[in-house]
Amino acid sequence: MNNKFFLYFFIIVLIGCNNKKEISFETLKISTEKEVNKPLVVINVPKAIKKSKVSETINKTIKDKIISLLIFDDEVVVDNIDDAISSLNDEFLSVKEKLPGGATRWEATINGKVIYETDKIITIDLETYEFTGGAHGYESSILLNFDVVKGELIPNEELFSSKEEFYNIAESTFRLQEKIPANVPINDTGFMFEEEVFTLPNNIGYTKKGLKLLYNTYEVGSYADGQIEVLLPYAEINKMLVVKGEKQE
Image (cartoon, one colour):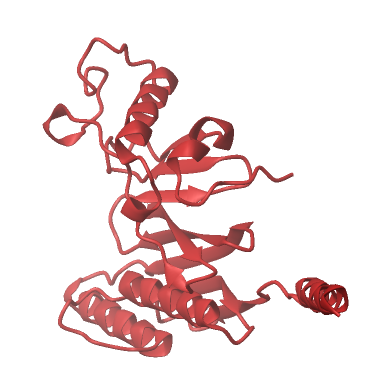
């Protein structure tokens, strides 16, 4: 009897595992390309379509990031992307009216994609470009790590089981990559870390080849330095991570 029970239980578990579906995504597309007298807004980002806590968290987080990128007035409060685009348009028209020759068309482009996915972690990369006048626009990246099991966005500080050890290997790798000798200050070759102290970037994310540390333009360097990426192979850092990374092809 016991053997039959355990066999039945094993079969049920096996079927459940085989029927487990990964989170599905479609692309949310928004464009104002044809509205020539308004800012150009182009959005192509993942939208989770399977009803679950993590899907809701992913969609809300991406929506909030898009809104924050489009809103220029801190006093403006909106809860959807259409209203954020309208707010951007109002700001553009206000500036345009004040300039004798008018204003060059503003731009906001946000492209996102899933760059890493397992049954424990989903990482989404948002690539953004903003132009609101001036000599050039500004490109940046936002890395978002989601806990699939808990259905939550993971703060960077909660990625590590041994932050000090990770911090040390990250600094060593950064110095080696950027050719900064170990015995000189971190800013010796022109970087701009606050108080001459190495810090982790605002954006850290899982990728198929390793954990990416991404410093956006101006974060620790000049505009000419652009974005700086440091890739740490999982084989070297997994013991320091709460959720171990898996190298993928």
